[in-house]
Image 1: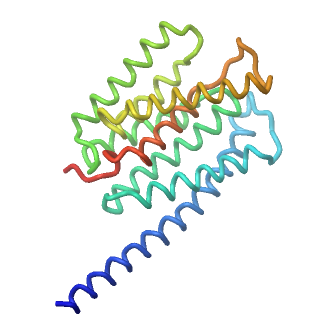
Image 2: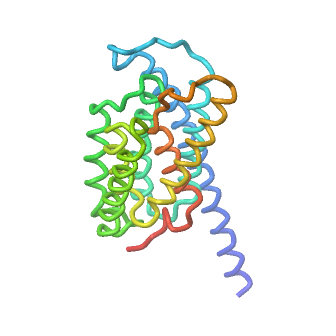
Length: 230
């Protein structure tokens, strides 16, 4: 009996080691992807590209991207293909984050494939029931749409397109973890930028990166995410 217990303990340790190695490897890949996304956004779409040189924004996006991917892999209880689906969505979200930060836009050339992939993932996602996914997307779009009517100029149409696949990915009620996290991130960042006189009271700050950040935080801290439900 003691031998069986020791064998199970070794198996668990081996599994944890494999997960850790996978998280580190995928985190490294996404760190590179984050840096490449920032470099792409500095040159594309070309009509508003500023060709910003490599700098602190490149490094920050690389580090955050790597940590986000590693964290998702590390805490996921899903089969490998389920985790892979979330990582594929995260990859597209990274590109949109970079372009929104750099050019204040969410290009449909990336946004549309994100929506299609999120829709296709719904019937297979082992972490979210399909009905809850649809309710999550509808609630997110409805909530932000109502907010856009109240806060004139605070949200762009692209934000509504962006929050729909995030709602499908997280489902109900986890989408509100993401939305509240996004609101806090946006408020905190705005205050810091105002204090540092980097922006004015009437300056436009893109909300897309905060939506992505809120979604990532929901995946990392909400225990109801990345867990098998079916």
